[in-house]
Image (cartoon, rainbow, N blue to C red; front, top):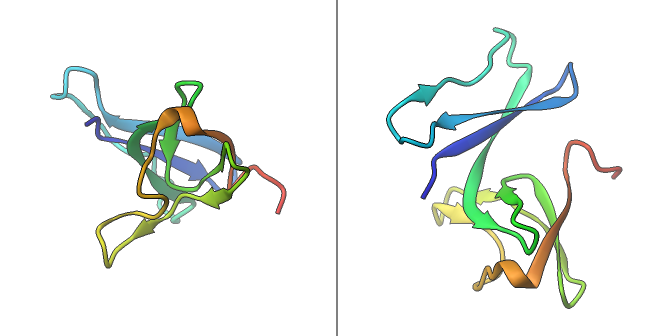
Length: 101
């Protein structure tokens, strides 16, 4: 599994991606502005039907039209969702930062 994160810049309104490089040995640190202006979200290790990486905070739609927001649950040490995450059954349709509420 790849160890990747993204950070939403609350002021600049854009994402920065960071984590371990492809070789697994070189770490690229997270952005920081010293004022907690970033929201950090982890890559789930799962890809949707289009091959797009699924991150915490993404909004997904399944083939049966069920929609959900991907969230980390501390109590279970995992991401909430369905018991089966088959990339052919869902697609990412947005995220909690850029999608209209």
